[in-house]
Image (cartoon, rainbow, N blue to C red):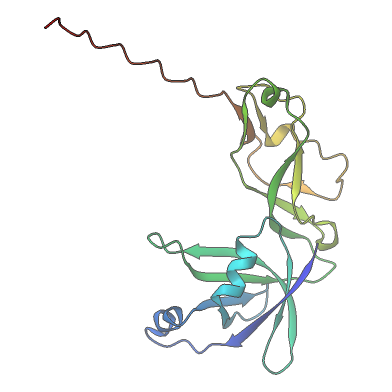
Length: 198
């Protein structure tokens, strides 16, 4: 998994301070680790947006102005329900020898049988929550759709994990992840309007 550096600034919590930051393109955030004090910080919205909307997950080195760096990953992101802008982010710290739960983007591989018949691949669940050691975490999770037919889905319980023995999918086993949707039927031509003889 790629390691990305991201600058952060310490933040003092004041009334209406978060709203003022957002107006200047800065996102309020927190950094936390089990058993440690939560740290309030702020981060550049544009730099953060590139990570949040990436097709891959990343390990993030948070860099403070004094040169201190801490290793983390994005645990939670809150969006404005109207503008869809990022309004808050949680970063979780971790050590190399501890189990973590991380959301990893889903991708597909293979030429699906259903697509050959005119169907279309639809990813229903765009990220899977994986539990494992940080070194075992992939930057994305590919699901083989080769044998998937139109109208059929691959559920969490059907995803083979033999090649990833150190990882466990934490999502509900009955959750559909990928499906093949049938092609849309073409609209029938409108009936011709009878024209009365003049």
